[in-house]
Picture (tube, one colour):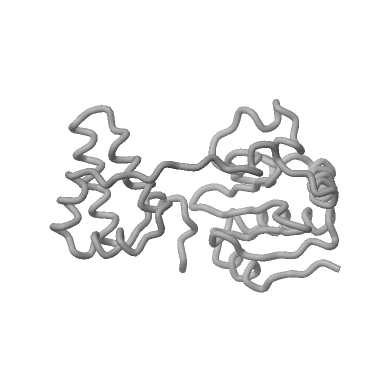
Length: 203
């Protein structure tokens, strides 16, 4: 038998009113398609596991997202190709933005079957090694002038440091680079990761 995680109950209750029926529907669909699914929280968002990660959902300020871990093996190219936002079905603002319940349950069953068979998504078995990034001189100098920002940056894991460094160094114009650097220092001084806007707000 599957299991339900009370943390997901709390997550749904803390979500915006428009999101609650969407999240409840997705949760019901996943359990219908895979009765043995186990609920959990990963990356601060509800996830559903069955012999490995299967799918996950999230609520944001104005939309929800729902995605399959092995999306490329579950959805047709035209269904997953053109969309906006994270997840397999783009920005979900109401139940009308989702496929029919029957179709969704079919996708969940397919996702469970893939995990049951131990099939892996091509390209995920051997992640590409990333070269370590060097902290630019201007970034380093700015951090030295702001103790709070420096403390946050130093305590961040390499992936979160990379998010900031790449954002600043990929700017094409010097003016844009300076703006991004200033914003980075401000957000770091507030203890925020680069993509904090896309994280579920805690109430």
